[in-house]
Image (tube, rainbow, N blue to C red):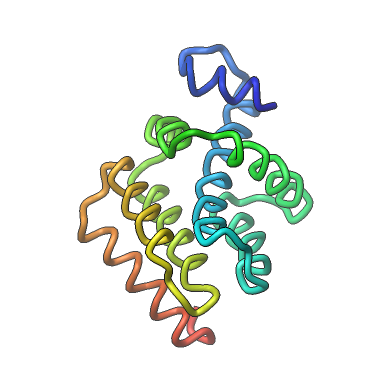
Length: 155
């Protein structure tokens, strides 16, 4: 799978089935979420609980698919050398709304443990730049995540 992912990112014109293309995009999105989770070099209990829920809702995946995607994303994320590997495919295939939802999910993970570390913040900001999102969109998604963290019953 990693070889296919590298082929996909290295050659976006590669002939892939729709299912393979979607798997690669899901893996790229999950890997970006893991970048945030692992920014402080540990996965908190809150982050571990929230990650599968965010993948289910953000990528419209089944609960069964999410666990294997997380395992695959961990391997992919550990071998990655930059965020660009993941953002390039997403830029080519996601619309602005989908990119905003992914940034929102990243902020939600960053705030899940009640503390935003500088590395989480940097990864999210850099990802938003690579997604060509406006600063106002980044801040809007952050504010939504902060509001949800402060008032969890108002999701």
